Length: 307
Image 1 (cartoon, rainbow, N blue to C red):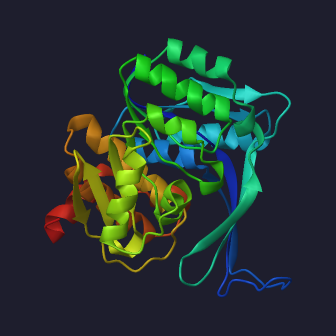
Image 2 (cartoon, helix red, strand yellow):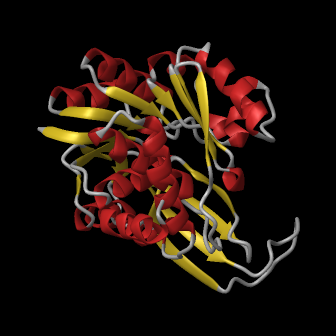
């Protein structure tokens, strides 16, 4: 089957607790609300790409449990192809708990579950059955699944976008198979040892990442925007000025939007501007994956604000 974007990655059930103040160590506090929402970096990125109008398939794993059933149905509702989503007998669906405070910042902890059980054979079977222009991948599944997917994608001539997240899951070998990587400030420091505090430090870090074998780098700097580095040149793209209500999944929305834009054009700066708007809209809302904007919403915002 042919797709615009194939996403290999994690899919989780997220338990999201919103509270006025983040609890101190050892403290018990009451939440304003607790919701169970579809999540996982791969899942969020696939939904982002699909909501932005691209033919998207997801390659990953859930358990044979009620959470897995719910996540598969959610994907179908959001037009993500689940033909290559695998059910694992001996592993539960990945589950994470997120605490969001009044500022919209989040802290998460959880278990990978079936995500960690994704094998090289699972990946090979899926890639034998698909063709896609872009592979979008993160580092929240098993190491062997990440490397196998990236190697096969390169052999098939796909453009490989690596979101090196979470920072604890970074696999250095993966960078040599990526055409573009999208680290945030924390991930950039983990990869390079350079603390990103401004445009200059972001550029130095991007140059160092390029030596790992990645020709194109976008360093995400939060409220300072992002630095696009390609062909030895860097361009700073400003952030969107919005009131952040919920930052969960913002980076995933950004990655899905980057991939979506690059399906139609190889203009990386334009793609970064498009993704900045999409992620900015996302953080200004609550509601998990339902808060990810559609293509029409992004275009309407850009027209209204001359973005």
